[in-house]
Length: 256
Ligand code: NAD
Image (cartoon, rainbow, N blue to C red; front, side, top):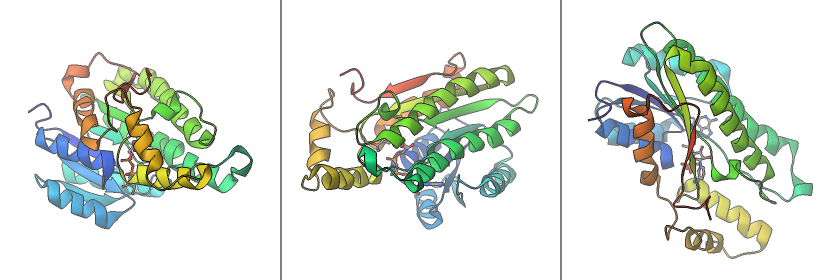
């Protein structure tokens, strides 16, 4: 078991990719805290995982919520060795219809929330003899723009950049900061994406999702479980010399 005795907090861990990683870490021996704005769903996920997993309410857009969640997770686990910065939201609109409200929500969760969660946890990991592993969730959307998805793409480009800066700043404290960049993954988020493409491209529901899946070189959309292996590697001692990188885990999507 590669994470035996480790402790991990997974933001947005109630469902989708975050829930799969929480389960995967627990299978490898870690104690996990499933932290999510949806507490009831987080509690269900933690109960399903077992092995001492527990849920905490967290809204990454609020610094008091971050501080309370991190303090409680540390109290219950005796410290945090791994942070998976996975919580995010999606929205899209044609260029002329982008609103400040949509911009604020996306950047508050995907960028500001990720940054201050990382700051809070890394301050605790900096204590002598500690160190840790931080894994940020970016996206193929952060590697290039899309005509209808400008703000989400920009937010994920910011995640790749923050991963580089934090990785370089924190490695001297024994904290590895790296990222994972998924392609298209079949989660509740993609159902929301599909409904927005249906609206803006005049498609039947489900069509965009089917088409993007067919376009992945691997031959299908990603599943949440497809990201667990890389997330375990980046949380384990096997990745100690990996610094400030964002790995594509996307069935070849970005290369195509
Ligand atoms: P999802 O929408 O299924 O799950 C996201 C979770 O984050 C939910 O449980 C939600 O309650 C939680 N959350 C939202 N706002 C929050 C907040 N303010 N504070 C705390 N928790 C909050 O998403 P997913 O598809 O599992 O995506 C996981 C990560 O992977 C995200 O960073 C996403 O941007 C990225 N990603 C997803 C895809 C995809 O195709 N699904 C592709 C590329 C990247």
